[in-house]
Length: 272
Ligand SMILES: [Zn+2]
Image 1 (cartoon, rainbow, N blue to C red):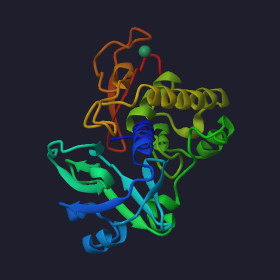
Image 2 (tube, helix red, strand yellow):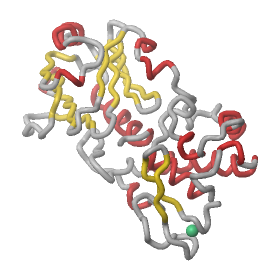
Image 3 (cartoon, rainbow, N blue to C red):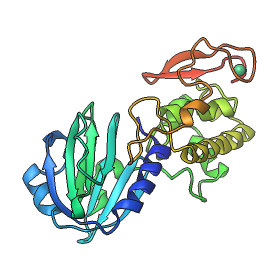
């Protein structure tokens, strides 16, 4: 599932290509991707609109359109947004094609069909958007800020880190990799962390997100950037999907546990 770094890389790629382009026509092959409008209403409202800017909030991509409305896309499990300049063969599982001026296309491809597309006047119309937590790469997200988020919460630290209402954009892979780097067990209760551990976790989260963006994201599954290319950060992952393999830091073996139903990998020897 694309997390903050992958969505950021897609956003940067699309921003370069799509700014000022006009949506001429929309082909909708799967109505279920549209979450707040009928296909007819969506097509009518989005046709003729110019894309003025593209931004990201958490794992949401936001296209600001010239009439003041927003096209908002969440890729969920397997969504991809691929930009084409010519007549390339249509990818399998293409759900929506935005035909732009000069024959350019933006294709929304989504194997598992969980992806979500909204067209709204106000971002507050999207329920999941209203309660999003702070952006972990923003300056104001300090170690102190993370400490306040964790304070008094007995839930396991791992399940707390991936809660979008507490921190926006962090998902399963980067949460467990940040915990490994900070030497903290994913099973610890959040409130039990010392202030030094909170500091280490804070810098591990920011460091791993920045490095993943530089490596153009993690392609362990279907993630591709807006040009259809894979990222490279999967080669840097220390624990994800490495169950039974030796830890890169100590002699321990990587274990797997389920936390809130999600596979979580860690080293029981050096993560305490
Ligand atoms: Zn270890």
